[in-house]
Length: 60
Image (tube, rainbow, N blue to C red):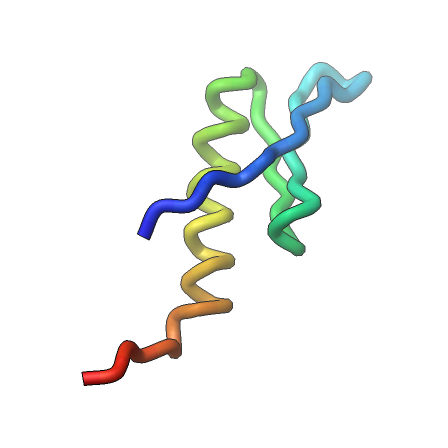
């Protein structure tokens, strides 16, 4: 399943980037570059969605 997710990235005063999403509660990721932060955020989003939807079974 593919899903598009809006992610907000901001640079913190400490020099790191912080990613959050209003669409997926609990998504918080931090990295040294935007690319690293997006990669971490993607991994976190997958884990959160597995936890949220992992027990769903399709009929048949």
